[in-house]
Image (cartoon, rainbow, N blue to C red):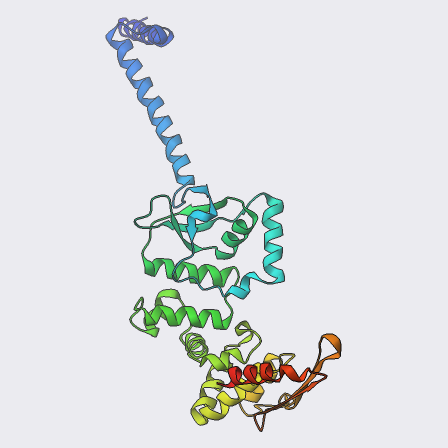
Length: 324
């Protein structure tokens, strides 16, 4: 064997001995160098593992359980009160209760100047359900601007439980009135809203309150009715408002289709609601009353039967109080 080969064998044997005694620490220069290389490889492997684990959480936000009482609705909240008074919401509450909490987290941002308090970004129905059930709500916490909050809230609602047309209109009108966006076009661009649909929603939000109240619920309003009602008001506002007030007094309340037909002068094949109304009321001791309404003449008749004559003054006062 050549001298050079023997020297190589000696060097390799030294490295092998260094690896075998690494736990006790190497004392030779070659062994210490081998130890350093091994440590570097180990650190590199650990770093690569940590990078892979961090990549799994890239872009994610930490969730936490928060007392729903510490979370307040956003000033841009866009759910009408009647949204929380229907079969769908009760079903959501049962689902959250059976699951032991909301599986899909809501999103909040820290409330400026109030340590430990938060403002809802989206998830108002889930938050309300947890609040009613007395359960902590699972939430994502993230800082953001008002514009970001508004846009995220609007997009989330459209993807999960779309707003009703009137809810959307009121929300967009508020954002414009308070200067969150400089124009309707900018609002549409920022929140990815169809500009034509935005215009129809705003038309609903700008309707007089009497017209809104003519419907049994503002949630019944449809996008296409905004321009129709606006046009009818421009043509004859006094007539439309008078009809709206008549519709508010009807029992039972007419359907939304009947209301829109009446307010827009028929507007189709749906007939206007019946005009005359009569109500019978039974009281104690054989007392009774008959009420009649003629909307066209704006006339109400009242007939009281078996009433003690001494109570005539009470009746007079009640009517004076009603019409004064």
